[in-house]
Length: 306
Length: 306
Image 1 (cartoon, rainbow over the protein chains, first blue to last red):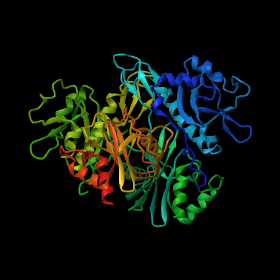
Image 2 (tube, chains in turn red, yellow):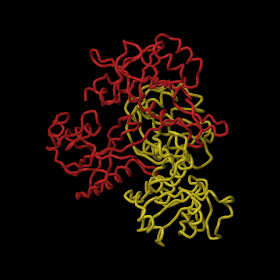
Image 3 (cartoon, one colour):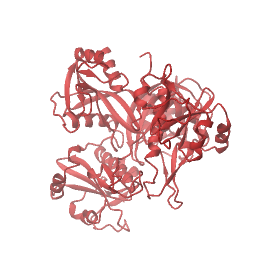
Image 4 (cartoon, rainbow over the protein chains, first blue to last red):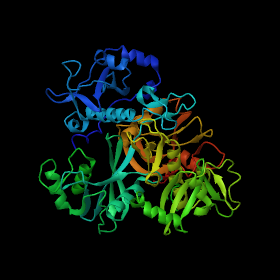
């Protein structure tokens, strides 16, 4: 790959030592180099004139939202400047942006492939963090309100007797290329475009290893038993906060018993099939593989090229 | 290793297809082969006469707790029997157990090394799940109460307007053997036994890959920069719900700048040092490595043996 997989290019120094440093924050808020990424209901402000890029704004443009209590998350330092995401969901009509020179609010997934890797990585971080804040306004221990803490990296229960701290979720998901000789097992979900195939995947559950999660998910979804599991690579996937853990798994059996609740279809495909399906990815021809931005596509590519 | 790493030996068929099947549950509740693991404030009922083992009980022993609304979690099927964990924290004095033939409530970590691998794996699963239920009695979206759903694999907000579903957390943690030629970088925390060293570790954050998490944590804690990262193995760690992702990382620099908030010390050790530290593990001699049940110990062992 000449370009890293989408969402994996985050290059911020997260500078966690400043998360509890109000003096530093005050300095950065007064520093004209500090940049803010406005996000509206998890869509990011993107400048679409020319090559798409994040429409970073200065403090003046987001001050009113911060004053109104908008969630502010420190993303990190890059090019000697502090970068923050700010939740401007208070804007009632996002098409009528506050300043006429603002870009547009765009779904992160639909634009990230067109951004520079570092910017797509920034969007993965910002979207996961703001989605978590949005869904954790209340304390799961006692039901009271929570408030932002540590520049966005925790929330704290406002009830002094409870005082629980809550931390952002990152949900590990195993996604695996199941192979048997020159064949691999791919599936398609009910919500997928018809005849678009992907690697099988599922959340790691409490009490299991990555390898056990791989074997369990493959068996649950297809009845196929797997032996050796080999880690390949990982990808953050901000819908809302998955960490995709890409693996290869060696199948020990071939017969497919489909879990029809989870999958619309699962089949064995040859390397020849998969080469064709990869080439069709992004077209309307079928059967085809999921698009290049998905780690499944990269796993399949690595397999046919190995 | 002749015995798998502690907590990695879970052998239940989690049989997720039954999580929404009340008829199946009713059958299993009437089935005398069904077994229950009573847990009291996250300690597990252990039979200590002879080799320690989980003191699985029949329905009669836990019925009163279930009738009173105790949290019940389906662990899975093994030996043709359904296994559940049941939270009996309602017992006021856990030393006076309900039946004189019950074992004792024991901290999971302190006993797991002595259990068969499958039993230690069951405790990892049960402890993570019950800890999550305990801390998620309220909906983080709206603050209303939540109720157990899907045999323990989700909780649902009881407010019909909200109706949010919540799923158990699994928090990915990177733990890495940082090496440079014949030397490796180990650290010790403020809460560790004095001069007991371990691999550096930290939570994966939203928007980063496993490899980026490794490099960020090493840099944050010691100022050492890393290049190549290689995955080794994983381990569930139920305190409360971590997934330890064991890696090797190649250091590019040597100078240590200690994060004194996170660590009490970090040093480069030679292979010779680490062999000695591994041999001292479990003794009171220092410096020594963390105990064999920790994935850090296994990473160090793999490194000196490679």
